[in-house]
Length: 153
Image 1 (cartoon, one colour):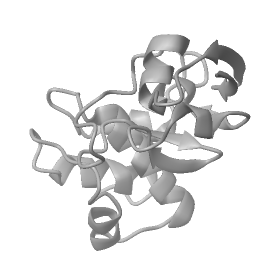
Image 2: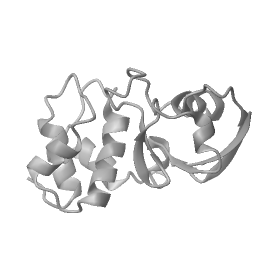
Image 3: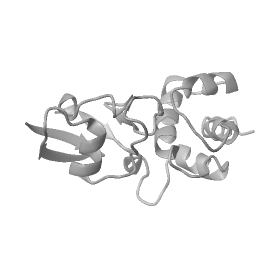
Image 4: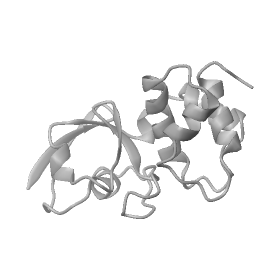
């Protein structure tokens, strides 16, 4: 089946099998590998990206469902060499260790601030509970989200 998806502002058309997950379309057909495959069961959130401005776990969605839609991946957040404020906050706060969860965590965090521009620490923790990090203990991730929201600690 032929689909066309706008990814980070560029149109991408490809033939995909109807069972192809969006995460595999992004990685294999589009060639953007920042969206990670963590579990294929929607448990970890490593594959989180934005579909029409909403955070979605791309392992839970078929590529054909994204036909005609707009997708933003971690590669699409930065403005050239200028990092997105959330990416900068993650860097400033050392909110990563191995980095595997980072793209999905950043995408979920951006979406969280779109919904709650000035969240409390508890709201950040609750808002990111669908994204797992096996390395950091979350403290610096929460700190980074609060910094990006303007409430640097």
